[in-house]
Image (cartoon, rainbow, N blue to C red):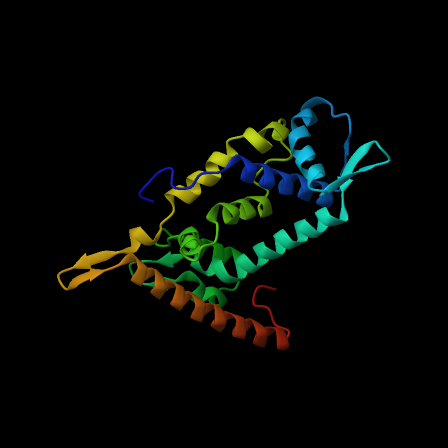
Length: 232
């Protein structure tokens, strides 16, 4: 990114994400919170109030906040968006810009997930997911938040996570990832033969990625039909 503060998290967006995170915690644990919060849970009051105002939680027996049907539907819709994102964007998580190759082109060449992960750890790979998302008018902040939620990076098991949910450094980390990511402007290049715009490079990357996604899906469908899995 050419500007360190290109991406900024608005207060209402942070509140929404914090609400979704807490809702996920309540549904997946499962757990509820008493109306009269105590200890560190007192820091959850503004988040719970946001959820209650939007009818994503309800008060059970005048004593506890519990997820509502509307809240569970919101959470499932949010997770479905993340599954769709993984299907269409994970391919761009490891691209060698020098050679123009995708790590996922060899996804089925490995005998174990461990070997695959070691392959991904090579320094040649660049993560273009944020740049591709931004180019396609998809909010990168939401994408990174989704991945943090899915990977458990908010530290629910740590003391004081309730305070961190709204004011912790995890939000700065999300913004840092977005602001330091490779984007369209970074992809342009020139040599003695002329100049190639970042837009042209991005379009080519997306076209190659889309073709590879289709190829991988066809291979996975074939393996499913034959009831085979190379990592089992």
